[in-house]
Image (cartoon, rainbow, N blue to C red; front, side, top):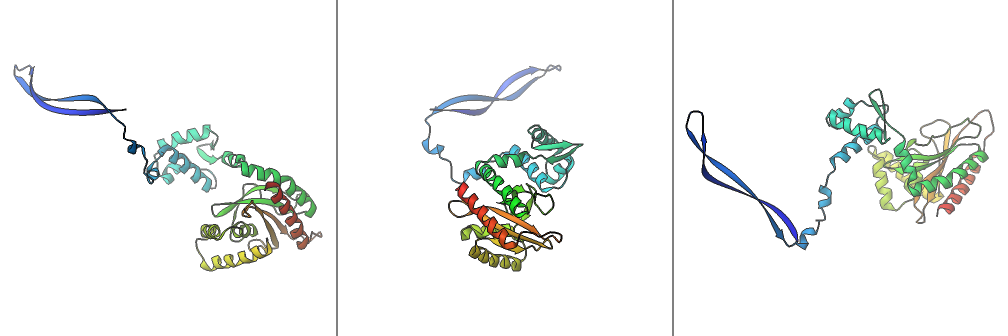
Amino acid sequence: MRKLDVVYEINFPCTYSVQLMTGFFVTCDINVRMNMNISEKPDKSSNKVPKNQAATYSAPALEKGLDILELLAETEGGLSQKDLSSRIGRSVSEIYRMLNVLVQRGYVVSESDSYTLSTKLFQLSHYYPPTARLVTEATPLMHELSREIEFSCHLSVYNMGKQTVIASAEVPHGMGFHFRVGTEIGIPLSASGQVLVAFHDPITRGLRIKECFEGSKIEEDRFRKSLDEVLRKGFSSIQSRQFSGLHAVSFPVLDINHKAIAALTVPMLKRLDVKQTSLKEVEKKLGKCAELLNHRIS
């Protein structure tokens, strides 16, 4: 049984005598409201939620918090409460209350009325079991590989049209080219980007390409053609189009369905003063390292 609160409003005139200071009487109408509880049998069909109803739900407080986090993530340096309020389109008081909570929970850091992201979100991403296991298995292999070839090595994953470095092994002697953990790298111009897009089914590949390219159709077509070569070879080995003298080799880290969940990459920066490991040797050893990592996580 379901109880319903029904409010009936009945207007009826009655002579309510109020004697004023002047001695006159005033007649007025009184609105009488009666609350009645009515019991009703539940309608089973009313419990059904329309398929499209979920899309109409909203959580304003959560949306404000996410707006703040996303804006801070896209901004170099900090932002003041006034800046956040202006760019998000919320009042300063709304932003103030939300920022207090985010600072208390450790997601945002406050310094002299300037707010920046903390590393908590990055730490949480590593607690996600598949990522945590991948980093745990890859880290010792990467350090061993870097010692052997004397080049740095990093592991990156696809992230909404870009890629994020989740593990890195620096050059043993401390001199060379390397990416720090947390670095975001573009997809189209990198060997690891080719790997992260190429080793997927056509639908996923197409969606990722659409996320990566917003402009030149010529560049997009060029990238699509490069994927055929990557699939044929099983890895990517290209001269950098961003840094002079840099050559990158990248192998896919595959799941049980042979889809790339990460890219294992060695950036080779040419030195003039010492003899370095050859490109063929790096490709061979990096391939073995990726194969061993695939075996451990599958």
